[in-house]
Image 1 (cartoon, rainbow, N blue to C red):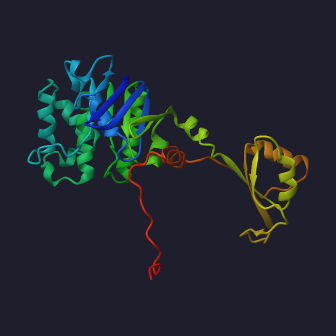
Image 2: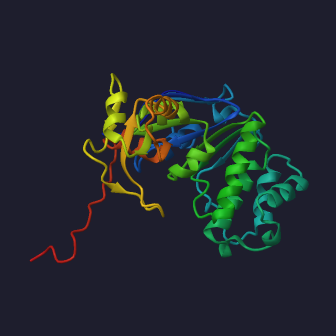
Length: 323
């Protein structure tokens, strides 16, 4: 288990992390999210004792990282995959780490195989691609068979096969009861991998919740309905807590169907598909489509962090806009 207690970090007059208090529990993959400059990397460095907090403290397994007598066997970490001597081979890099903890050669060979690096184990790291470097960093994090993993952007540079590999790996490690904290900018990947989310913005905690609850709180769930009797269905469904958008006049949207059927589209929030279907059936209103839509993790994240974005992108002017 990882615990942060009012974790705060200041550099001069600049506060990078402020009063972070959260728990990362065993048996789950916890996504650590936030915009660029939110303080994620600084927080991870404080968890690992690489940066001293200005105030507050953190523990891993009930102790600070430095208090573990054999940290590689307790905590596996990937913060910067390129922090490897470029002249060493992948095998010798891992063996040098293994020697510090009495880890056998067989374990080195196992993690090389697990990371798909056995064919290049004898090659110097300076010739590795970004993705291969990431795989080596993950292999190093797994070397001591730790109960806790802290990984900063582990899918960075991986190809689709590698992304699938790390996704399945993290979920399998959590299923074994390990504690997994992973940061990423890929919201679509976090939606598939994480069970829980810790989201920060400008160094402050914005959310500490499950993925499902976070998306539901975003309020983006809706049902798309296509029907030739949209005004009638709209009137029947109107009520407290129900929001309906779509045409109120005669059917106007011609569907791209061979039959040339015309229907209107309604976007309904506050009522599920089952309820809408029952109401339509009770009043003999035909439905050509009844599709539940769930807000994406990406949209929910963007909505939550829009006031915490430090580096905003300015859209370019259209061609010919200037005189």
